[in-house]
Length: 197
Image (tube, rainbow, N blue to C red; front, top):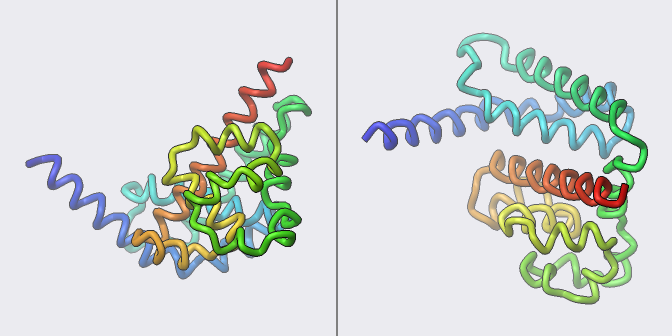
């Protein structure tokens, strides 16, 4: 019975967070651009901010400035990520790999890829062969919930809202899954790099 009450509370928090925080996305993106000076990094920072905000929403005091609270979370995330990047050896950077995943050449050559279901795309040998080995291997062992959202966003160029409607999940869930998928690939890439050292 206690677990049922907790689950209802978590759902209520998630819905309240999405209702209050999603309208602030443009504001957070503008702030992220100023910090990162790069559109892709800014998008990732906003996404990571929402994922963290959702996890920590129970700490938010109702009636206080949510915009300022999220901006502080975003700034702290940026500083943490910056410190990690400066401590990481050159060869272990994920930035290059993320650019390869975002590379549109493989889609321009075959526009049908954008329309494929993620499960079909993950089984498409021609598409998978075009990806770097580390990305291909990471996708093959990634939880399909995260992989599907990643493929729908990166390859299918679908918006968070469109993905949420397709999967019948809240937008916050899409953002969280996309964040986890990228974190998984970063972790997988770091392990691969360490094994080569």
